[in-house]
Length: 572
Ligand SMILES: Cc1ncc(C[n+]2csc(CCOP(=O)(O)OP(=O)(O)O)c2C)c(N)n1
Ligand SMILES: [Mg+2]
Image (tube, rainbow, N blue to C red; front, top):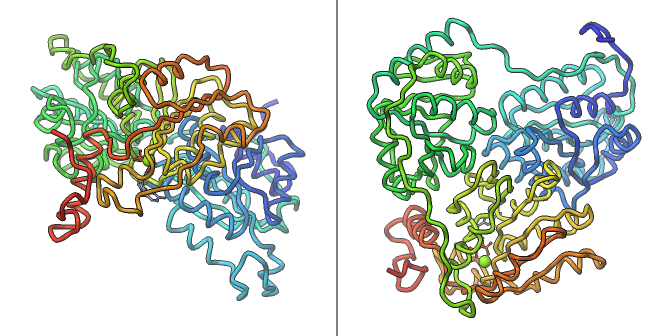
């Protein structure tokens, strides 16, 4: 029987919180237990509301939650007071930068201790309790300390804020109230965009349609909000009807199907293909969706959008002097598509699709970055989930992806080690898809333990690890031969066996093209770990260029990069 919205029921604070998280479409929670959250974890285990995904540390849990949310829409992270919360804060800040809605629940010190001023462990022992919620105020969209009185309103407010803003939120659950009964709504949480203001929507769509209909060279530029607000299909519908080319920022790779006939490619200032830069920067009607330029997505500030760009955000639009509030991204796209005249005579395919990869020369030759990416291009299948780490592994952004692939990377926040934790999250969110991780030795060392959690759950990703004896991307920036860019050499491919002695994982150490081809032919019936040995000074040209430019931006004209042989330079 459908319950009216007024009906209430009795439930504990903790059970209600878990119920609401489940109703938000989240099936798992990542984190590490601690005495201040154990009672909540016990409620989770007793009720079976969520599946617990214990991780080796909270930083990895925060990355896993981020990866999970990118595929699932939202995620939950459960940590303990201060020590857990602060370990997770880097990952949560990354979720903020990258617009990923993660609900962080921190089991905190009991109210009794706050009221009596008792010194507690996991605090500064000075009777304070506000420091960590204040720290989280810097990196989340909303925060609350739950009470039996505010739990019903605050839990819903925070979950709705995360969903609506596509940003993380933080709530503290003092450990002595989680099992107290409160009256809660019987009706489930409904997450839905409020409809746009009808007049603003009409006027906004009319203004965009007018501009588009008059334009000679309209184009669309897509950033990651298109993914977070789930409007890729609507964008492609508009592009199809108007035959308008669509480029994506590096932060939105694969959000638009790369085989879509109107797909142009990645827009990254001067580092874009010339046809992409031309189509975007000289467009007389550019529609940008959630665009947020930074150094790494503008070819180091070598590109700029036309002044007349129409800027469409999640809930507002700028067209020339006019600003439209209370218009949702999806309704704007649908409204424009509906009203805009159909176009049939614009040239449809604006660039030649990539050539099929030919056979490279000598199978016994030492593996190079060029040969590596060429071989991997042939390995990618439709529906793969690719997770790309910072470093030379980010060259995976240059792969041409077949339909329905997902590309996960932390282009803006760029915290190395992210990809390994994130992979645990993507695997958990989409267990029926194939997941490929591209990571370097240096980055892997930050979060390597999470491989054990993947093996524990019998996950079967393919892990491509480049062992180039250190931080090659940093050598392109500064310190080509400096000791600070070296790392310890691990037996990476042996780790599955270390982390799970009875593992059936297939491990390969690859030194030549032929070795790599053999590893790539292994069946995907188990975790595959491919460690590729490469030269420390071998890097894709765009990684080298980006590092060289980055050094000039970071250190200026008097910087040490100008001394001889201080950084890897392109070999022309
Ligand atoms: C948490 C964090 N610490 C430091 C950095 C700086 N950093 C960016 S890339 C990188 C090196 C990556 O090395 P590796 O993963 O081995 O990649 P490759 O050698 O293939 O370039 C470092 C140290 C960072 N981005 N994040
Ligand atoms: Mg490396």
